[in-house]
Length: 344
Image 1 (cartoon, rainbow, N blue to C red):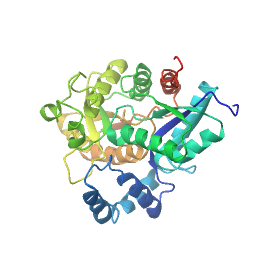
Image 2 (cartoon, rainbow, N blue to C red):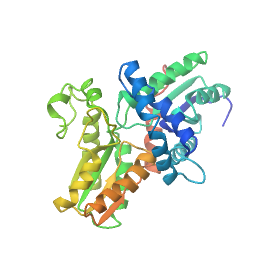
Image 3 (cartoon, rainbow, N blue to C red):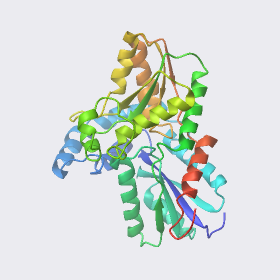
Image 4 (tube, rainbow, N blue to C red):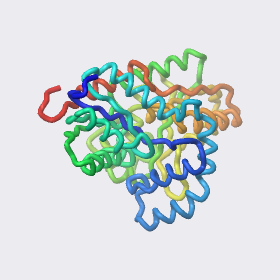
C-alpha cells in the first residue's frame, strides 16, 4: 500500500465495549444511548431514562451477556469488522481501508486520523447496515461528517447507499442460509432484524400507521425509505434466492417503555412449536457481522426460548462476516460510489 492511496474506505458498524466488564459496558451504553437519533426523546427525558433506569441496572446484565460470546481475541463484532476491512483491502489494493465503530473503539476520529496520515483525500463511507434507519445509517453519516469537520476538513466524502436489495448481499446471505439448511430439514426460517420504535418508522413511511404490525407490501414510493418495509423486502429476496417457501419476519432487541415494530422475535420463537413448527433456522439479515445480538440474544437465549416451548431443532445462520460473496458486495458498493468528479 502506498502512502498516497487513491481513496480511503471506512467500514463502520454500530460498536462494542472495549471489554466485557460492567464499567466498560456502562461507558459504551452511555455513549450509544445518549445519541438523540437512537433514543429520539426530548433531552431531559432521554437523560432521565438513561441515568435513572438504564445505566444503574443494564450494564451488569449486558456485561454478563458479552462474557458469553467474548473471544480470547476480543469482541466478535470488532474481529469480524476488521476481517471485512482486511479482505476488502485485498480486493481494492489502491484503497486505504479502515474499520471503525460509531460508538466505542476504534472510533471515527481514529479512522479519520489514520486516513489523513496516509495522505487520503477522498473517502467512501460504508455504513454496514443493509437497511436504512436514522438510528443507524443516519447517525453514522452525520457523525462522520462532524468528525471530518472537527479534524479540519480535507476529506471529500461520499456515502455508499443501503444495500438491502443488493444482489451481492442477497446472494451472500442466501449462501449462508443454504449451508445451514443442508445440516438438516427445518419447518420454517425466521428472519430476525433489529427493532425500532414505531414512531421512528412513521417518520419516514406514509403507510406505517395502516400496515404495522402486518407484513409490509413490496417497496413503493410511500415506503421506499421505511426500515420495516426494507426488512420484509430483504426476507423475501433471500428466501427466493435460497429456495425457501416457509418463512417469517420478526424484530428483536426492543426496550421497554414505548411501542416497537413487530412481530417480536422472542414471541415468535415461543409460539412456533405450538403451531407445529419444531425445527427452525434463524437468520439475522440486519447484521453483516456476528455480534451480541446474533450470538447471545438469538444463538443462546432465542434457542433456549424455542426449545423450552417444545421446539426440537434450532440452527443459527451465521452472518456474512468476511465471506467472499459479501466482500464482493462491499467492493461493488465502493466502486459504484466514486469520489465526486470521478466516474464509476
